[in-house]
Amino acid sequence: MSFEARLSELKIELPPAPAPAGNYLPHRRVGNLLFLAGAICLRDGRMSHTGQVGGERDLDYGREAARVCVLNALASIKGAVGSLDKVRQFVFVSGYVNAVSGFADSPLVINGASDFLVEVFGDAGRHARAAVAVTGLPKDSTVELQITVEVLPD
Amino acid sequence: MSFEARLSELKIELPPAPAPAGNYLPHRRVGNLLFLAGAICLRDGRMSHTGQVGGERDLDYGREAARVCVLNALASIKGAVGSLDKVRQFVFVSGYVNAVSGFADSPLVINGASDFLVEVFGDAGRHARAAVAVTGLPKDSTVELQITVEVLPD
Amino acid sequence: MSFEARLSELKIELPPAPAPAGNYLPHRRVGNLLFLAGAICLRDGRMSHTGQVGGERDLDYGREAARVCVLNALASIKGAVGSLDKVRQFVFVSGYVNAVSGFADSPLVINGASDFLVEVFGDAGRHARAAVAVTGLPKDSTVELQITVEVLPD
Image (tube, each protein chain N blue to C red):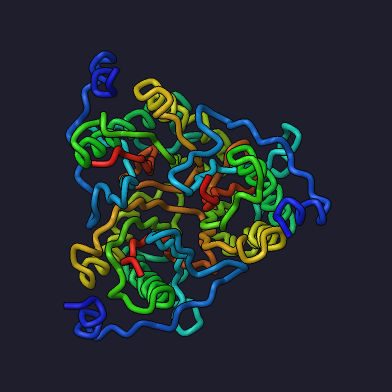
């Protein structure tokens, strides 16, 4: 099944590709490597998930936040190459969690993103990953994901 | 106009390529991708901008700090390939802002770097980007930038 | 001398490749670039180094932590391509130090990793690098390393 068909089957509708929050591009391509800009928790032009995990926010909230970021990243991929079916494989996810000092469960939060990618893309959605807790994210987003994808040659 | 000519037109003089702050290289090249080491706020061998944004430092200070980091990154590119005219396109900027907990304006700080790159390189200076606030940076630098560039084939 | 022989000469035994701490891969390859997942301070299935540098932990502890991460990264490389002798060059190390706010010595901590890579791999072990202090790491690891390597063609 194609990735676009799988997305429809899961009744997931992609948002429009998010506008960059500054003077930068949503993606840059070198050969077949597509570097996406950091995706945050934007939904319909507003922040859907803000605040720090381990403080005012719990793990479930963080996992939901990670899923919102993935939707925005997928919208960026579609904006870049026209269709999710152009994805060959996900390569790397840098997962940043807005968290209190000493927060040790960033992998559990970022699993919300990784599980979702594998649910949609199967083996092609698997990726190497680093998950770190940081002291702040753009617009107080609870999660930010920076994703690198390999796309099919034109 | 060449990028070197544009730099002259803007009356910007590059510093000497900064020496690494540890046992690492200023850049490593794979094919036409040039990975630069993290650039901090060094000027004439001393730190020009230190301390945390959102605490003792404000946004304008952070933007200036980001600009200093860009100068050092450009000096590294020149050290690596001989001339800025060898740049094909900027690919990715990871922007780290030394900031207090909960700092939400890292994009505004890192715009200081992105605006500068576009001012000098035009469309080739545009890049994908992630901006995060971190709890500390080398030598208490206010900003650190890790930049990846695509260069022209030899 | 081969890198495997050099490792034996140094009487260093690699651990088994660590299992990912979430739903992700230990590495993903694109062409000859091998992106390793973040390596933390796991030894025999338990955390060897936890806690924050600048707080309960000192620089020497951080440097040891960085060395443990390298062992895990090398085990991942071996798991990916069968032998360390398939390494052409180390490309990039993102070094995250679990640290207190304002921590300014992340380069000294991450030198524990860089020195070790150069000790084993010589010039091929040299790499570009960024070192940042973050507010938390997986399982409270003191250091996390994300390493990208260029391997020899098959």
